[in-house]
Length: 368
Image (cartoon, rainbow, N blue to C red):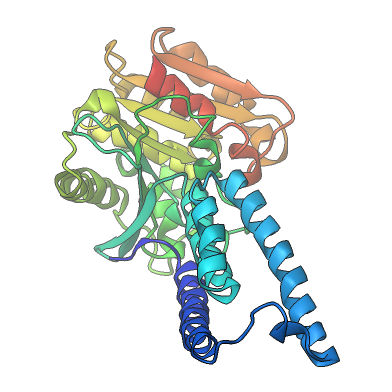
């Protein structure tokens, strides 16, 4: 399990800490020598042109560095900066400044993680990234999201952009009780469509398999993976992680979310496990893969009993331009209570679009 900060942040903290230790060690040694030799700290530093160069260089650099410490501390909410500056006069700037740089990296990493931390696990060949909020309690909401590689890390995202969910977490996601966010990666990229697809619809509907774009299928053809994937999340990942974080699972506080095929997988998760998920949040739901038959199939099977909630939205450009008739059909078949069928004009299909509205369905789930 990997926790808290990225390897890059930890490496920077170690490096700056080494510099701080060197600064403290040299300051202690040479200050001791200066005291023992009765050196004058003022006059002895300016006895030659070379001394003037070094002394003024240190003086100007020190004032610039301390200004940086004050400004960055205020920006990051670090309240102990006066002690650091005072410590610089007692020990050495060569100790205090790299120490602050190490503290700054730590604070920036925490800010990037919205005050929480990242944990990483693996379940049956699926990497699972977990954002853990700063405060946990038995009633902490749980949000399961598909395509975990696109959630948190730009370097892993398909197109270099993430959902920006951690950017939204401090202010735009309004609930004080922040959710535990579980990002499930697909096992293999070539299995994505099969894992996220509604397996029961395919097996029950003649011709449904032929509608799946053939280039998205493994060479061996269709295999029953959707139910296995849903079972992995509901029967293994969620129970294990809820025990680990001491969270009491409850459908009213458990949501499943995704985009495109992940939107279908979220609806399917609710159909298969209505006692696990009370809410499905679907961005740019990819209806064309099953057409009107898929819309009708879900409309008949979703447990819209007043206790479950569904959000399904669409944009109007790019791939989302194809969704309008299916989205309208789905909206017409769903009850008004506990359902939102949202349209976002002039938005398209991708993380850069979804990150602009990621807080909308999450706030609807958490505050209604």
